[in-house]
Image 1 (cartoon, rainbow, N blue to C red):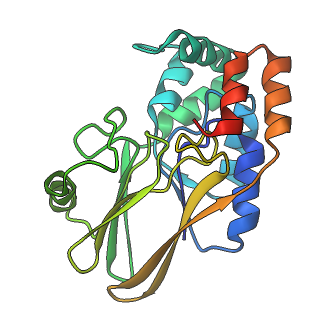
Image 2: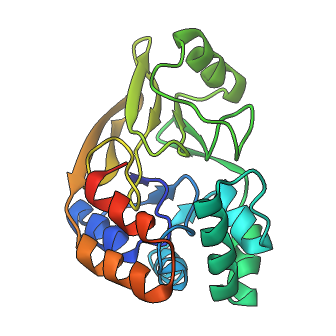
Length: 229
């Protein structure tokens, strides 16, 4: 199973992840298909064609409604730009995504959302979060595995013998000082048996940067991709 988050309209990064991951039985995306980068329609199309199961992110919600509440000026400009580029059908698709989702495979119960079980779209959960809060997420959702996004920073927190809270990091706009697209692979080996690996893959940042400049999006959005911040 491929676990990804925060693609943010970066189709070259998404395609690189899909190629690197190879054949998988399922793809879970924990929100923010669009905004910041210049290929929102391409990413939505790839998500549909690839059968990606996605939940809604705050940028999906806000770009679809043209409501960048609380954003900094750069993110606000990007949100407005994205709204203008999206078709009515694409906006409806983004708003149709669930705020949370759950799947069960071979007895493994998985809960995933963009922010946290307390605030599905908007809460930032960082690696330094206390074990007590992580444990409350597992208990509240009755899950073995809770997958979050939003921060663009990957982490994998093991709690007990076989329970995890994790963030696969951002495929389209990493913020952990590593510019390579980030994702995770979940291998389910049997009942209560699974492994999780974190992977990185290079993609054509120049292509994304040049398209950002040509599109009129803020230049800083392209520059940050080279540094992973």
